[in-house]
Length: 456
Image 1 (cartoon, rainbow, N blue to C red):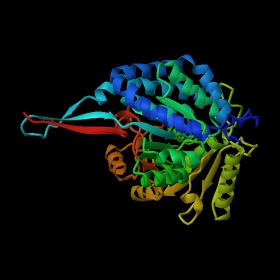
Image 2 (cartoon, rainbow, N blue to C red; image 1 turned 30 degrees about the vertical axis):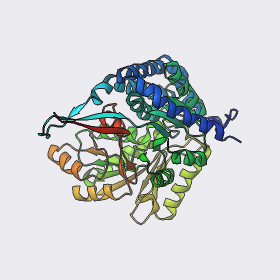
Image 3 (cartoon, one colour; image 1 turned 60 degrees about the vertical axis):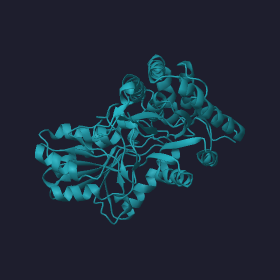
């Protein structure tokens, strides 16, 4: 039986399962992706493919209401934030439509001083697999499919099992934008089928956004088959407060950094590292704001915090909190849970000996630490197996650059949160994965940088 089914976390209601993709359909999809790359991708120009991607962007805008409502049902995203995700996804497609030709233009090698010329010509590799999560159903696809379709790669997309409706809606958008059937294909596949696909010699690479466990499994299969991999995995990003001229603004940023998308974002601020002189004031105001948040119906336009994505997600978060308390952490404040509706929780007195110190909390749980000085803040911030993003607040320009240089993460955002943009590269280090998406680097991952050396 197919596991692809929409279960609305706000109501518990489930729809009918979507039919699982059969092995025969998988084989046909790989063949279509490979054939389309050999024909359509090589007979079209970057400009032509960019024009189609711009149509994809426009269709996201045209179908904004429908697309937003789908993901509210699928994973409980508050409606206003669902609109924001659709809009941001459209902007990503437009960004690559606008900049694709420039990014993929022939590049001279300035150091070359021999006879004749030497250039780098960028071209596609072939069929790629994308394995995407439930928490940002459109955005995750946009940052993978957008640049790669402009480049000329073809896409086989496996979405999370709780997002079959948005997965189908996106496939239809690509078809309606003029892409041939083999350019972008949605698959309701399972992990065993995906492993077999990665091993197929016609598949040239795989991109996964998801858990460490899933990333390790995919990377193992890809490594055995010598396939390129991009992984964006978990995160436990530090929010480092070393100085501020406006504590209320810093607290508001901390609340937003922790709780966007129902606090279910890989690059959310999850560990709050506060200089000792600011700790008491920050903790008091931050705790009050966390407890004020009242999870409500995600279809209400004014809802900020909706339900967690599933009962199992809420149960898992509850278990993490209980285990942290059993190991010595203090629940400084929390809002009672109601099914999937999970209110804010603040933990203090967490030490390096506790599981909570090294785990990722995927929900509205914040750990707040006090540190004596800048050096201690950097040490604590880096004491994590993850290295996705980070947030640094300071009023000292020299300190900002000094600390930013020492943070072990793929991204450092200074004096602000929610600063993502299509032109800015996204990705991490350590157990948060490797590779980059968005910006110029996002179109450079699955590319053949071919040297053409001409002797005259």
